Image (cartoon, rainbow, N blue to C red; front, side, top):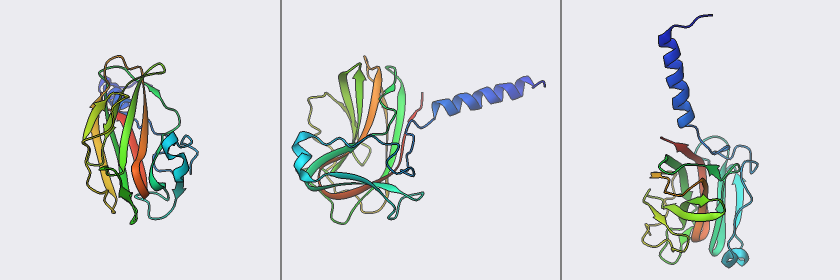
Length: 200
């Protein structure tokens, strides 16, 4: 079977655009329960604060499920999708988005809103830096030793709200690992439809 040059060119453009915009998060909506997600990371300072990650079916943003992160007392807990870190190259551009909402009892502590999206930039096992994003989409590259100060302190919204940001992979980076943090918060908040995709 022969194809016209115009059709072949269109197919190549379509294929290339799909490869660029493919979501690296295998189960962005938690429809497979926790199967597509690594065990939660709980820093040492939060081990005794009853932090938890579970998939629930209470009013998701879309589909049949969403994730709930919770802490009983000013804790930190993070989840990251399986299949990460992923290979990247310096200068690559990414777009990230997810939907969040706070439970009625959720409260950020220590001048924090209670949620951060962190993209760990790695070179082998060494950290190059952390692209950190707050719920209003404000982002900055922090060193591994930096505390996430000067991010939005306004309370998380109690209705589903989209968080989105774009960033460029910094120099000396060979891989990237995304993680969603309940960051210095008490109570629970919900996550759904987590998308991380290359834009160039």
